[in-house]
Length: 303
Image: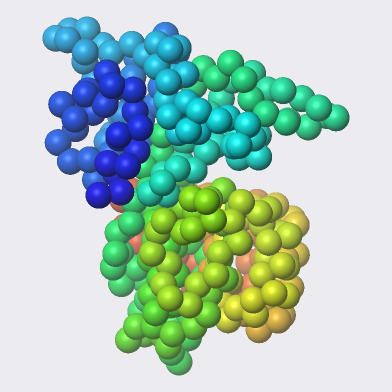
Protein backbone atom coordinates (compact mmCIF):
# COMPACT_ATOMS: atom_id res chain seq x y z
CA UNK A 1 0.00 0.00 0.00
CA UNK A 2 1.18 3.55 -0.76
CA UNK A 3 0.27 4.60 2.79
CA UNK A 4 2.89 2.26 4.26
CA UNK A 5 5.63 4.03 2.29
CA UNK A 6 5.27 7.15 4.43
CA UNK A 7 4.46 5.31 7.68
CA UNK A 8 7.80 3.48 7.38
CA UNK A 9 9.59 6.86 7.22
CA UNK A 10 8.17 8.06 10.54
CA UNK A 11 10.31 8.01 13.71
CA UNK A 12 9.92 4.70 15.56
CA UNK A 13 7.80 6.02 18.44
CA UNK A 14 5.32 7.81 16.18
CA UNK A 15 5.19 4.85 13.81
CA UNK A 16 4.18 2.62 16.72
CA UNK A 17 1.43 5.05 17.77
CA UNK A 18 0.03 5.14 14.25
CA UNK A 19 -0.07 1.37 13.96
CA UNK A 20 -1.55 0.98 17.44
CA UNK A 21 -4.29 3.61 17.22
CA UNK A 22 -5.19 3.88 13.53
CA UNK A 23 -7.28 0.90 12.47
CA UNK A 24 -7.44 1.82 8.78
CA UNK A 25 -4.35 3.60 7.43
CA UNK A 26 -6.27 4.36 4.23
CA UNK A 27 -8.48 6.78 6.19
CA UNK A 28 -5.54 8.66 7.70
CA UNK A 29 -5.35 12.10 6.04
CA UNK A 30 -2.70 14.03 7.96
CA UNK A 31 -0.07 13.56 10.64
CA UNK A 32 0.93 16.82 12.34
CA UNK A 33 4.16 17.07 14.30
CA UNK A 34 5.07 20.19 16.29
CA UNK A 35 8.12 20.26 18.53
CA UNK A 36 7.07 20.10 22.17
CA UNK A 37 3.37 19.78 21.29
CA UNK A 38 0.96 16.82 21.12
CA UNK A 39 0.98 14.60 18.04
CA UNK A 40 -2.24 15.15 16.04
CA UNK A 41 -3.87 12.99 13.37
CA UNK A 42 -6.56 13.98 10.89
CA UNK A 43 -8.51 10.73 10.60
CA UNK A 44 -11.75 10.23 8.70
CA UNK A 45 -12.25 13.98 8.62
CA UNK A 46 -11.88 14.36 12.39
CA UNK A 47 -9.00 15.49 14.59
CA UNK A 48 -7.53 12.75 16.78
CA UNK A 49 -4.94 13.36 19.52
CA UNK A 50 -3.40 9.97 20.35
CA UNK A 51 -2.15 8.86 23.74
CA UNK A 52 1.33 7.52 24.47
CA UNK A 53 0.06 5.96 27.66
CA UNK A 54 -3.37 6.03 29.25
CA UNK A 55 -4.24 9.63 30.03
CA UNK A 56 -0.96 10.93 28.62
CA UNK A 57 -0.72 12.53 25.19
CA UNK A 58 2.17 11.75 22.87
CA UNK A 59 4.45 14.81 22.84
CA UNK A 60 6.61 15.24 19.73
CA UNK A 61 10.29 15.99 20.35
CA UNK A 62 12.49 18.20 18.18
CA UNK A 63 14.75 15.15 17.73
CA UNK A 64 11.86 13.24 16.16
CA UNK A 65 11.19 16.08 13.72
CA UNK A 66 14.89 16.14 12.81
CA UNK A 67 14.84 12.36 12.36
CA UNK A 68 11.80 12.52 10.08
CA UNK A 69 13.32 15.24 7.90
CA UNK A 70 16.54 13.22 7.60
CA UNK A 71 14.57 10.13 6.58
CA UNK A 72 12.51 11.82 3.89
CA UNK A 73 15.52 13.70 2.46
CA UNK A 74 17.76 10.63 2.54
CA UNK A 75 20.10 12.60 4.82
CA UNK A 76 20.73 15.19 2.10
CA UNK A 77 18.63 18.31 2.63
CA UNK A 78 20.70 20.16 0.04
CA UNK A 79 19.30 17.88 -2.68
CA UNK A 80 15.79 19.03 -1.73
CA UNK A 81 16.55 22.73 -1.51
CA UNK A 82 14.25 23.70 -4.39
CA UNK A 83 11.31 21.85 -2.85
CA UNK A 84 12.02 23.03 0.68
CA UNK A 85 11.87 26.70 -0.22
CA UNK A 86 8.29 26.06 -1.38
CA UNK A 87 7.53 24.64 2.05
CA UNK A 88 7.18 20.94 1.28
CA UNK A 89 8.93 17.78 0.13
CA UNK A 90 7.19 15.09 -1.95
CA UNK A 91 8.14 11.51 -1.11
CA UNK A 92 7.54 8.10 -2.65
CA UNK A 93 3.85 7.27 -2.98
CA UNK A 94 3.00 10.88 -3.78
CA UNK A 95 2.72 11.91 -0.12
CA UNK A 96 3.58 15.54 0.64
CA UNK A 97 5.47 16.59 3.75
CA UNK A 98 4.87 20.26 4.59
CA UNK A 99 7.48 21.98 6.74
CA UNK A 100 7.71 25.22 8.73
CA UNK A 101 10.55 26.83 10.63
CA UNK A 102 13.05 29.64 10.25
CA UNK A 103 13.54 30.80 6.68
CA UNK A 104 16.85 31.65 5.03
CA UNK A 105 16.42 34.78 2.91
CA UNK A 106 18.64 35.81 0.01
CA UNK A 107 17.89 38.72 -2.28
CA UNK A 108 14.51 39.19 -0.64
CA UNK A 109 13.42 35.64 -1.48
CA UNK A 110 13.25 32.41 0.52
CA UNK A 111 16.26 30.22 -0.31
CA UNK A 112 15.71 27.46 2.22
CA UNK A 113 14.43 26.54 5.69
CA UNK A 114 16.30 25.66 8.86
CA UNK A 115 15.38 24.95 12.47
CA UNK A 116 12.30 23.07 11.28
CA UNK A 117 9.79 22.90 14.14
CA UNK A 118 6.55 21.86 12.44
CA UNK A 119 5.80 19.08 9.96
CA UNK A 120 2.51 18.20 8.28
CA UNK A 121 2.49 14.81 6.58
CA UNK A 122 -0.35 14.84 4.05
CA UNK A 123 -1.28 11.38 2.88
CA UNK A 124 -1.89 10.97 -0.83
CA UNK A 125 -5.12 9.10 -1.50
CA UNK A 126 -6.40 7.74 -4.77
CA UNK A 127 -10.07 6.81 -4.87
CA UNK A 128 -10.52 5.07 -8.19
CA UNK A 129 -13.99 5.68 -9.55
CA UNK A 130 -14.86 8.64 -7.31
CA UNK A 131 -15.29 10.69 -10.49
CA UNK A 132 -18.10 8.46 -11.77
CA UNK A 133 -20.76 10.58 -10.04
CA UNK A 134 -19.71 13.83 -11.72
CA UNK A 135 -19.33 12.78 -15.36
CA UNK A 136 -23.06 12.92 -16.22
CA UNK A 137 -22.95 16.64 -15.34
CA UNK A 138 -19.63 17.70 -16.89
CA UNK A 139 -19.67 16.04 -20.33
CA UNK A 140 -21.44 16.65 -23.61
CA UNK A 141 -21.09 14.93 -27.00
CA UNK A 142 -18.39 12.62 -25.64
CA UNK A 143 -16.22 15.52 -24.48
CA UNK A 144 -15.67 17.13 -21.07
CA UNK A 145 -16.90 20.67 -20.48
CA UNK A 146 -14.89 23.51 -18.90
CA UNK A 147 -15.34 22.57 -15.23
CA UNK A 148 -14.46 24.24 -11.92
CA UNK A 149 -14.56 22.13 -8.75
CA UNK A 150 -15.25 24.26 -5.66
CA UNK A 151 -15.17 23.48 -1.93
CA UNK A 152 -13.55 24.46 1.36
CA UNK A 153 -10.13 22.90 2.03
CA UNK A 154 -10.09 19.19 2.79
CA UNK A 155 -13.33 18.24 1.03
CA UNK A 156 -11.80 16.13 -1.74
CA UNK A 157 -11.38 18.52 -4.69
CA UNK A 158 -7.93 17.26 -5.64
CA UNK A 159 -8.90 13.61 -5.17
CA UNK A 160 -11.90 14.08 -7.45
CA UNK A 161 -9.87 16.03 -10.02
CA UNK A 162 -7.26 13.26 -10.06
CA UNK A 163 -9.83 10.60 -10.92
CA UNK A 164 -11.49 12.82 -13.53
CA UNK A 165 -8.10 13.24 -15.22
CA UNK A 166 -7.51 9.48 -15.17
CA UNK A 167 -10.90 8.69 -16.68
CA UNK A 168 -10.66 11.35 -19.40
CA UNK A 169 -7.14 10.18 -20.26
CA UNK A 170 -8.26 6.56 -20.58
CA UNK A 171 -11.75 7.30 -21.88
CA UNK A 172 -15.07 6.13 -20.42
CA UNK A 173 -18.72 5.84 -21.41
CA UNK A 174 -19.20 9.63 -21.10
CA UNK A 175 -16.09 10.90 -22.89
CA UNK A 176 -13.71 9.66 -25.52
CA UNK A 177 -10.08 9.23 -24.51
CA UNK A 178 -8.23 12.54 -24.71
CA UNK A 179 -4.71 13.86 -24.14
CA UNK A 180 -4.53 15.63 -20.76
CA UNK A 181 -1.91 18.13 -19.61
CA UNK A 182 -1.54 18.56 -15.85
CA UNK A 183 0.21 21.58 -14.36
CA UNK A 184 0.95 20.37 -10.85
CA UNK A 185 2.36 23.40 -9.06
CA UNK A 186 2.23 21.86 -5.58
CA UNK A 187 2.98 18.26 -6.65
CA UNK A 188 -0.36 17.10 -5.24
CA UNK A 189 -2.29 15.92 -8.28
CA UNK A 190 0.29 13.55 -9.74
CA UNK A 191 2.42 13.26 -6.61
CA UNK A 192 5.62 13.13 -8.66
CA UNK A 193 8.67 11.61 -6.99
CA UNK A 194 11.93 12.13 -8.90
CA UNK A 195 9.77 13.28 -11.81
CA UNK A 196 7.63 10.14 -11.95
CA UNK A 197 3.89 10.43 -11.10
CA UNK A 198 3.03 8.21 -8.15
CA UNK A 199 -0.71 8.53 -8.79
CA UNK A 200 -2.53 6.97 -11.72
CA UNK A 201 -3.50 9.78 -14.10
CA UNK A 202 -4.18 7.62 -17.14
CA UNK A 203 -2.19 6.64 -20.22
CA UNK A 204 -2.55 9.91 -22.17
CA UNK A 205 -1.54 12.35 -19.43
CA UNK A 206 1.56 14.57 -19.34
CA UNK A 207 2.63 16.33 -16.14
CA UNK A 208 4.47 19.62 -15.62
CA UNK A 209 5.55 19.17 -12.01
CA UNK A 210 6.41 21.84 -9.42
CA UNK A 211 5.93 24.61 -11.97
CA UNK A 212 4.01 27.87 -11.37
CA UNK A 213 0.54 27.54 -12.85
CA UNK A 214 0.71 30.38 -15.37
CA UNK A 215 4.10 29.45 -16.77
CA UNK A 216 3.21 25.77 -16.68
CA UNK A 217 -0.03 26.22 -18.61
CA UNK A 218 1.70 28.16 -21.36
CA UNK A 219 4.57 25.67 -21.53
CA UNK A 220 2.18 22.72 -21.66
CA UNK A 221 0.13 24.27 -24.47
CA UNK A 222 3.23 25.02 -26.54
CA UNK A 223 5.07 21.78 -25.95
CA UNK A 224 2.54 18.96 -25.53
CA UNK A 225 -0.62 20.17 -27.33
CA UNK A 226 -3.09 18.74 -24.79
CA UNK A 227 -6.81 18.51 -25.51
CA UNK A 228 -7.62 19.00 -21.82
CA UNK A 229 -5.65 21.09 -19.32
CA UNK A 230 -5.94 20.54 -15.54
CA UNK A 231 -4.72 22.75 -12.68
CA UNK A 232 -5.32 22.87 -8.93
CA UNK A 233 -6.39 25.83 -6.78
CA UNK A 234 -6.75 28.84 -9.04
CA UNK A 235 -7.46 32.26 -7.57
CA UNK A 236 -5.10 34.91 -8.95
CA UNK A 237 -5.74 37.35 -11.79
CA UNK A 238 -2.81 35.82 -13.69
CA UNK A 239 -4.52 32.41 -13.49
CA UNK A 240 -7.60 33.83 -15.20
CA UNK A 241 -5.54 35.24 -18.06
CA UNK A 242 -3.77 31.93 -18.64
CA UNK A 243 -7.05 30.00 -18.44
CA UNK A 244 -8.66 32.38 -20.94
CA UNK A 245 -5.72 31.85 -23.30
CA UNK A 246 -6.02 28.06 -22.95
CA UNK A 247 -9.76 28.16 -23.66
CA UNK A 248 -9.18 30.30 -26.74
CA UNK A 249 -6.73 27.66 -27.95
CA UNK A 250 -9.58 25.14 -28.00
CA UNK A 251 -8.60 23.23 -24.86
CA UNK A 252 -11.07 22.03 -22.27
CA UNK A 253 -10.22 23.27 -18.79
CA UNK A 254 -10.47 21.45 -15.47
CA UNK A 255 -9.62 23.40 -12.30
CA UNK A 256 -10.28 23.63 -8.58
CA UNK A 257 -10.83 26.59 -6.26
CA UNK A 258 -11.61 27.28 -2.62
CA UNK A 259 -15.15 28.40 -1.89
CA UNK A 260 -18.34 27.67 0.02
CA UNK A 261 -21.06 28.64 -2.45
CA UNK A 262 -21.81 30.28 -5.79
CA UNK A 263 -22.81 33.43 -3.91
CA UNK A 264 -19.41 33.58 -2.22
CA UNK A 265 -17.62 32.89 -5.49
CA UNK A 266 -19.40 35.80 -7.18
CA UNK A 267 -18.14 38.16 -4.47
CA UNK A 268 -14.51 37.42 -5.30
CA UNK A 269 -13.30 39.76 -8.08
CA UNK A 270 -11.32 37.09 -9.95
CA UNK A 271 -14.16 34.60 -10.05
CA UNK A 272 -16.84 37.22 -10.55
CA UNK A 273 -15.16 38.13 -13.82
CA UNK A 274 -14.99 34.52 -14.98
CA UNK A 275 -18.60 33.87 -14.03
CA UNK A 276 -19.70 37.05 -15.81
CA UNK A 277 -17.80 36.04 -18.94
CA UNK A 278 -19.18 32.47 -18.68
CA UNK A 279 -15.69 30.99 -18.86
CA UNK A 280 -16.60 27.75 -17.12
CA UNK A 281 -19.52 25.67 -18.34
CA UNK A 282 -19.95 23.79 -15.08
CA UNK A 283 -19.37 24.66 -11.41
CA UNK A 284 -19.36 21.62 -9.14
CA UNK A 285 -19.62 22.35 -5.41
CA UNK A 286 -18.47 19.66 -3.00
CA UNK A 287 -19.17 19.11 0.66
CA UNK A 288 -17.41 16.87 3.15
CA UNK A 289 -15.78 13.68 1.79
CA UNK A 290 -16.15 14.73 -1.82
CA UNK A 291 -19.93 14.51 -2.00
CA UNK A 292 -21.58 16.69 -4.65
CA UNK A 293 -23.62 19.45 -3.03
CA UNK A 294 -24.68 21.33 -6.18
CA UNK A 295 -23.86 21.73 -9.87
CA UNK A 296 -24.36 25.02 -11.74
CA UNK A 297 -24.23 25.72 -15.46
CA UNK A 298 -22.45 28.67 -17.08
CA UNK A 299 -25.44 30.93 -16.36
CA UNK A 300 -25.29 30.13 -12.64
CA UNK A 301 -28.41 27.98 -12.71
CA UNK A 302 -28.65 24.85 -10.58
CA UNK A 303 -28.78 21.67 -12.64
